[in-house]
Length: 273
Image 1 (cartoon, one colour):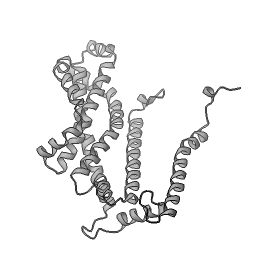
Image 2 (cartoon, one colour):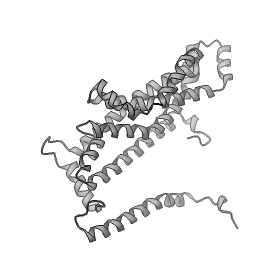
Image 3 (tube, one colour):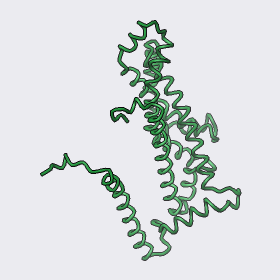
Image 4 (tube, one colour):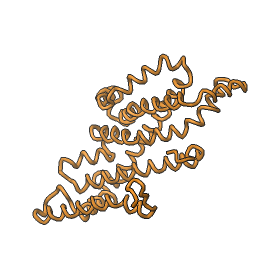
């Protein structure tokens, strides 16, 4: 008799088992929604899929009477632009600081403690300060993402840099490589896939900071729309928007993973993530 720890499901079975929890959640939601709407047709807590489809259809395919924009797509574009700029700039800053502090002891001594302290500051606590300094426009929202994500990436890249075998650096110096050549030809190629992995891990935090900033001070965006309609208990808009944000996050994560696999196949040999 096979032990449970030794049972490995086939690929079709893994797919079915992966889909099973989602199917159960949907089934439970449909049953609960039908029960509530049968008892009270005007109930807003658990709207039917038809109600949610109608609400999103109005936002996505009917222009706004006030602005003439298709609000769903405008919200998506605004949020993705802010998130892309925030994560991209944070990745550049974090990679640069992490590489320098990991590769150069003279940079590690003054900068590493500062990065550690900054990473411990709750970014949401600085949101009022960012609004005061940068105003309520786009810059403050992007700055919040940068401040929340860059220190994490910097510390992760710093750790990865310090974990690179010292023998590689010694061999490069033996062959006459300068400090610049060691950084550019030895360290950077090995750290790039780790940067992509750090970006993937920081996406959740980036979405959190984005939605929080949009909910407090914005005129468009996915977070703004959720906070706007919450006063009307419009769950038929909130739930699809949450599902859309989740789908976008999944797609971005998948694209980053595929980019890493295509650009750095050597890093993924042997089952590396």
